[in-house]
Amino acid sequence: MKMFQFRILLLVLSILLYSSVCPRAHAQEEAMRVGFFEFGDYMFRARSGQYQGLIFEFLQEISRTTGMRYKVVDCGNWTRSLEMLENDQIDLLPCTFFTPERAEKMLFPNLPLANSFMTISVRDDDARYTFEDYAALDGMRVGVLANTKNVPALEAFMRDRNLNLTLVPYIDMQSMLQALRDKELDGVGITNLGKNNPFRVIAQFSPEPFYIAVNKRKPEIDRPRFFVPG
Image 1 (cartoon, rainbow, N blue to C red):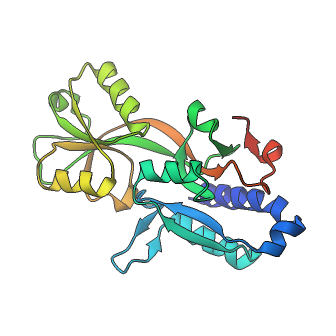
Image 2 (image 1 turned 180 degrees about the horizontal axis):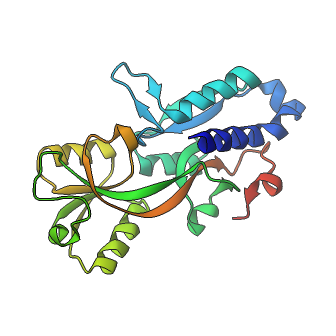
């Protein structure tokens, strides 16, 4: 957890370093537009409607200590989040996995926020499945978020374990998880949601770092110093 705290502090301060000495950016005092979609313990929305999670805890701390202003933009789902970043409707998109294709459309910091595992999760009361009993997974209907790296990760897992899973794509997390609750699915393929995962993990694989992606059009971003070339 401390490593995550250090990295997010470093990343946000890196983003701010150039804008803090740029008179035009400082004069305008534009709020950073932070894209939101459900991502486990890192970003979620409470029943009260308040945005919560580790991302917002540290954005609040950075705001308090540096004066940075930010506003949350609810993007609805992951696919829409990417579109809004590419279309200059948001400035920062936390919890984004790197791909060469995305690096052509957005900026990625040199350091990730953290690493996340891919998991297959099932209803807690589903006795058909136990942790790492891979043979029992054969024939499962598994929900997966469309246009994410979860799809190729699951396909690679299937090949490695010689399994036949039916992957059912969904646009947003909420409808996919509801389909699991309603027993329309046997499981869901999702990144590890931590304590915010309402289901039971039966397989964990393919660890991968994720980042705060940044709008490529932001003129105050010092790309050569802080971001890997796209």
